[in-house]
Length: 64
Image (tube, rainbow, N blue to C red; front, side, top):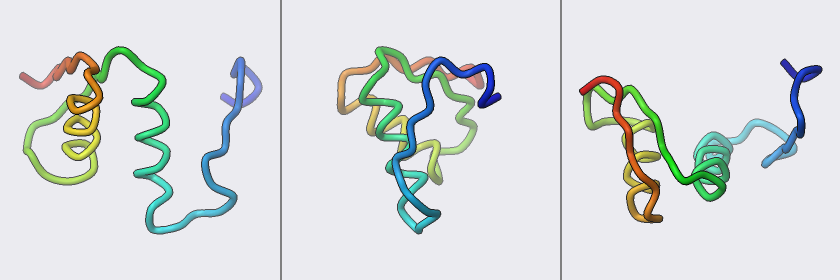
């Protein structure tokens, strides 16, 4: 995948407890849409969808 990418962005130098949240927020901050498969309102996907909603992104839940 890396070889085919137009751009590679590292939001953290190493894996930390908060690096996945930071990655998700980075992607949301640069997107107009949040496409997710959210079955249960728990966990990181739900947190990311809520963050996207707060920023005004359009949420598309393909699991609905």
